[in-house]
Length: 326
Image (tube, rainbow, N blue to C red; front, side):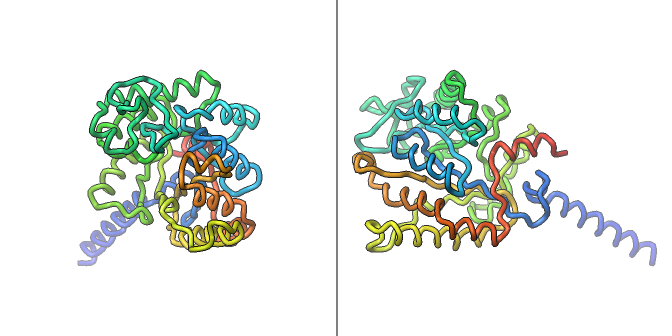
């Protein structure tokens, strides 16, 4: 009886240890301590406009966010790339772009793939248009063209991600995105961990974890979670014309939501912009984009990160740690 009980106990212990090993966060796998909350404070839409670049550059030099991604089909890419060359070591990836969402400020694909072009000669304005018209091979051709342009300009991206999430809208598109990252050994944005903040369905979570395993086995880092709600936060009445009120509101929203993050590597997406009067001709989103910039420049936000032991990382560091991980 003792021997049988002992065997059962050993079996249960082995199962528990096995579970503990497989249940480790990607942060732990990358060498951080158990319980560490590691965050990528990431700025989308570099290259989209002068105002986008100006806000991102200001935060890189004086604020908390340290990562960005560039929209290669857009008109202000050269200025952003010139900045990156003047500031080597900046954590900059590609915001792979398959849509052109603004009404009168538009861009087209680099590959001229017919399925990616709408009746105005620009990319489709929304994700459904891309999914409904573009073939997977056209998407593959376009994202490779965007990477090729970056490389020809002397800009070597630290990672890949997806503008408006278009590459996640179709399994065939997602396969092309993941394949490109693995082939070129460039990390891709993929929340393949616990996804507590993101809260996907059980089926999507299982799929994400499977792809996460695939990326990890290919030698690339993987995210545990994704914080992608900030674009939906609407400013309180009266805040739009008052920078101090706008900053306080946005900073508190980030503090409130980052407190909810579980241990692991979480990417926090934002759109830091220094809007001029011209930006209103592009988009009506200038207020929330400016609010992101103000929050990232706020000393209160920097103090919150420090007081709560958040570790701010970059894609470059993630890949370096993955190369050392077993």
